[in-house]
Length: 332
Ligand code: BMA
Image (cartoon, rainbow, N blue to C red; front, side, top):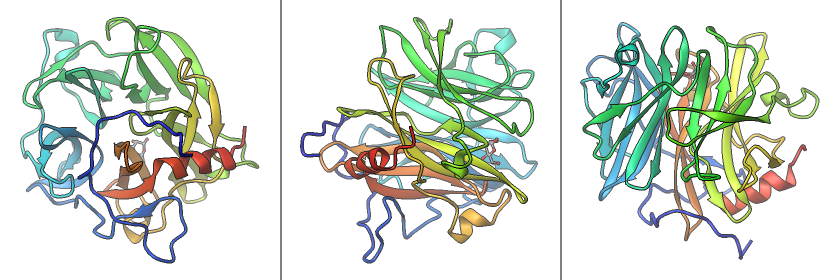
């Protein structure tokens, strides 16, 4: 994989720990997990399923904080090292001149995608049920909310970090108004971030007998990473067990030009609930990735994922190894 090219700005100081001795897993957990505790804010019940990006000489993020009323809200945070976070206790308020969209109901599971000088936030936005909210910021102070991307019900809106076919591009996961016992990943394009179309099917849950951890529903996780082997997509997969849903995450490679064409998809998961903070919490057995930092030179990746809908975890790996693993365990 010496010829592998990874797109992205250098990030030599991103959070990192070497693979622990004796650990031969493709991804391994940060020894300081949970990297963000549930009670970081005075009135937070849980902080999880959150998005971080490099910003200025440090990092910024949009965090899902459920408060002690269990209201699902978004909060802005900043960090020098992407490990110690200063999350603002007041909720993120969007500037919005569209009265029908402006009313805040709830918001959760944010993703943040940088394109040019703008950071686009997509999240699961309450509008007669969950759909995909879209906003942009340049400074993480003022956020401009645009039209919702899709009709309800939809979740897991994840943008691509550059235009494709001259359009903005987003993955999403049409759903129902509840806990959705189904779900495929779709791809859509938009010339202006307002009108979305050219919808394409990307992936269905895997057949049970091939890869059971992802047999009930799947949804895109962090912003896809562009490489010479295709877009590296890390996504969550769910199995419905007699104890409820269990969320793990795995990887796929999507065609660079037509990302709805899946080149490879791993049957083996990258990470599944096994640490105590992933197995126990408000919703047990959940690893839910929403963001990743990466450094093209060292090929390092750090994935931020919600653990048991309660805290935020961090896991490390090498992009070249993840790509190799995806191809080796391909179930297509
Ligand atoms: C999904 C979303 C996520 C959550 C997961 C597990 O439907 O609501 O926010 O982490 O369920 O509860």
